[in-house]
Image 1: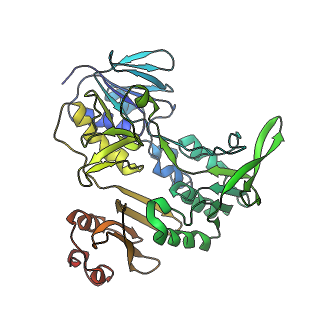
Image 2: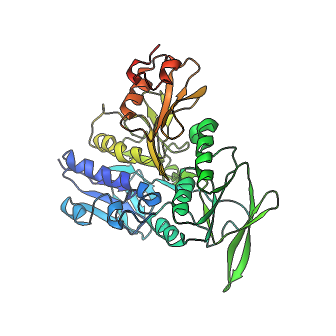
Image 3: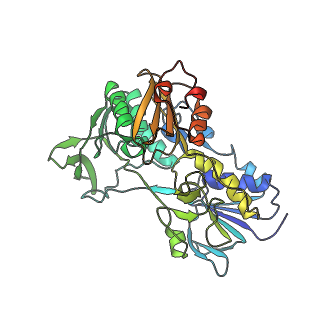
Length: 412
């Protein structure tokens, strides 16, 4: 199969997997993969887990182990280049060096960027963010036993870095504006359990805490943030400061091209935009989900891994392949390993099954249907939890919370 070039903006996991899917599905024409970073496409979970802790080598983070795969599969890599404009009428992508790349079909896999804090001192050059391979390497070099790390934000990245830092005997303070960590993702009931976990491992976790500014000191002519000033006037000294207050989808390119954007690039269940030649996948895509009947955007590895297969098929003219996977993510913190599946929006309550070390948590609707589930230090149950969600059946809560009752037998 041949034809005009398939161009992918974003040399990420999603971008690399889309190129792979195109070749596996028989596309024989040109493929161009454009990425701002100089590194080969890599996966992000190891950056805040095994690689950050030094348990995995650098070579393990890459989607394909070497550049040879891209050569062998005739994927043109344009690394260190940023797409600055899309000319939909002429079917061209303009790069920051003035190059124009023609496309037949275009995939936006532009990912997301860390949010900045719009407060005094928030532009200090020594503030760390955590998104790239270089960010992970810089943070790893800062995890010196006895040093003081302040993390602003108790989301997944903030807590995973906190756990890694404590394993290196770093003094860690985590500042969170909400009443519990992971509040937006998990709600207060489960967020409280993560608060207990981190405090038990020596993290100074401060909730309902606002950050007012950073205190700057002149170091060799550069203004460096040395302390964090809270809204109550308290100041916290730090050797290193990590800002982890969430991410924003990189939609600017799509918006300037006139594509619909609303907390992500809006696409249908086949990952098509209203422009029949432009598609989106990964963090940047807000896709209509057939199960939920509305658009959702998921900021996790599983989407970047699996959506490209659907996007590639759609780019090749397949019209009936939809992205139907339920949202899924995982995390490792200290001796806790967890998996989460589903979408708990609109949940009524959370119920638990098991003890404080190994348990399942279920987010239930007002009529006792499972919206989402999380397994903590219990394995090989994700498929059963997923079946409960997809079945939409009313659940006998007493059975659901009883470890002696198989999950397949908890329907009311």
